[in-house]
Amino acid sequence: MNDFHSITDFILKEGTALAVLFFLVAFLVGMLQQSIGQKLGDALRKTSLEMGAVAAAVAGAVTPFCSCSTVPVLSGMLRSKVRFGVCFTFLVASPVINEGVLIVLMREKSMAQATLFLVLASSLSVAFGILLDKIGMVRFVRATAGGPSIDGAVDLGGSSSSVSFGTKMRFAARGAWHELKSASPYLIVGILVGSLIYGYTPQDALLNLQKSVPGPLLIFAMALIGVPFYLNAAMVVPIAIALLGKGLGVGAVAAFMVASTGTGIPEMIMLTKLFRLPLMLTHVLTIIVSATVIGVVMEFASKFF
Image 1 (cartoon, helix red, strand yellow):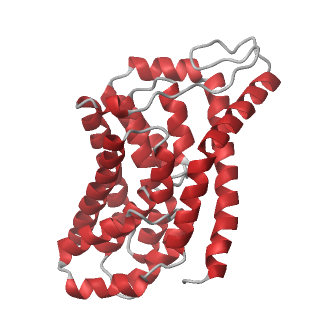
Image 2: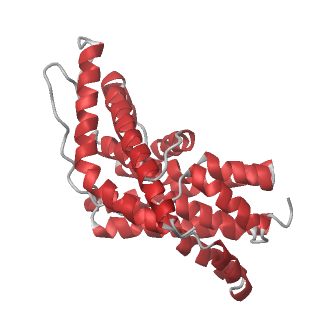
Image 3: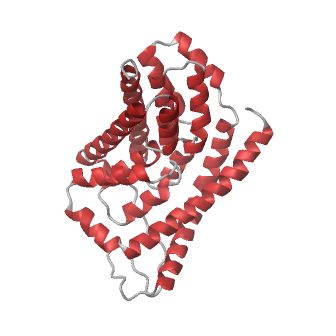
């Protein structure tokens, strides 16, 4: 679709939904930080990088966030001094391991392929989180300023036993509003760019690509094409089903789904608030590599089950 109505409809619906979701996610993060923040922070500081990354992958898999709404959670984790490798694992796993991809695979293929996808996506998220932590990519994280403070409010390291629930809610709401205001320029630009991309989803062009590009290269190309798209779990389902129905291989479709839900121009614009350029590029490369590996393995596995 490529018309003014579809673009404006996207801006109004997705812009409103993302702003509300962003605020709610940031609010819940604020409440969790006050309720279990100290215990969680202590647990993550005491556990190994490897165990923390596995826990982050599990948390990412069960949180239905799109790539944009992962950003406030990531911001809260970084401010809470959670280890970088754990944060990065969550950043990758949360949007990539989403219900949309699983719905497509279970409906159009099999439970075995959906399970294979879960294993691959989780393993790659953990592996990249550990690797980037080990090579010191934390040096490219921008300093994250804390949110507003009010009397009686607590942060990750504080004790919340003597603070009333109402005070915690006010603090979390003010923190969420602070997050939304600081992220709003990035969110607005991202939505505008995303609407232009959404206004033209070239399904026929993607299908024609299959005729001219051989298997593994096609999967890599689909991963590259998916990167700039803004597709959440709901958006990716009809597109993926249409592509599969028209004969595109499961590996190419899987690569496109992973890349388009794992990152996108709106998310990248928002991440500039937290990451410097080398880490931004590394994040994009991580998604492309993950999408390609998942696509190649799933295409190969589709010959057997």
